[in-house]
Amino acid sequence: MISRRPEWDKFAGAMYTDGFDTVMPDGRTLQFGTVHNLGQNFAKAFDVTYEKGDGKREYIWQTCYGISERWLAAVLGVHGDDNGAVLPPKIAPIQAVIIPIPHKEEMKKIEETCAKIGEKLKAAGIRAKVDLREELTPGSKFFDWELKGVHVRVEIGPRDMKRGEAVVVRRDTFEKSSCKMSELADYLLSVIERMSMEMREKAVKWMKEHIHKADSLDTVKQLLKKRAGIVEVAWCGETACGLKMEEEINGKVLGIPQDVKEKVSGNCIVCGKKAQSIVRVAVAY
Image (cartoon, rainbow, N blue to C red; front, side, top):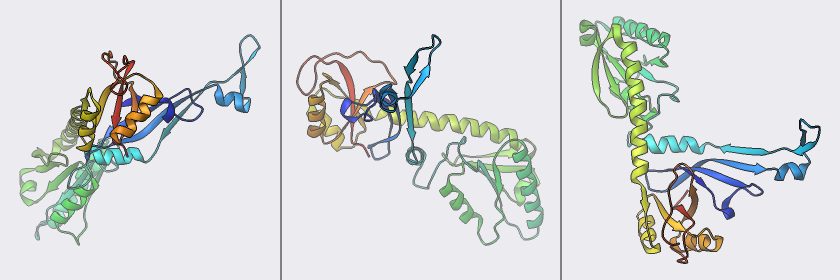
């Protein structure tokens, strides 16, 4: 979500600040990025100008963008589960891991096949890795890669070799499927694309389900006490009411929605005056 921060919470000296927030699994919000419109304020303070077409000089206009490691916390928190990380395909350093299922007589052949499959996947643009560690059992390898968030696991054992197939397991749903080895690269690309889309849809659904509306401070308090996510309320726009709201609800005013446009009606839930905007509040990290 994108919210225009209130005056008391914007970057000092900026015209306005927009914050980017998401809802974490415990119902708190996490800010992972901000955009500040600095206007000409800093240019005037440091006397930074440019020459216009007519030869006159004008103070420059500036913006400032901030994003930190919090985006990584957001990714891990929103998509992860009790088994570890679930990384979106676009940012995953490893998109597919190939794990040989051991068999005494055919182990060398299985490992050679896994290595060839790995090279084919890499040639198709898939960031793949073959796990040939001898000290770990297949089950231990499964657990290890699940924890790290690699989103597709490919299993190849003696029975798979006879059928000319491989077993494919999605990290997010643990859904299993089989595919011919000759078609594996195209199949994995389609799985990766589908997984990326479904992960996004699931995350957006989660966020929308945790945005509530309230018309009284008591309702807001109850929702935030339960860590229900974000609550949208009517606000008169006055700083005094905003600060009082934060104090009453023991939460934070995130700001006015910028990602959606919504008509405001009713009265400010603090002072009762006619509302000027919708404002988002939450318990934030």
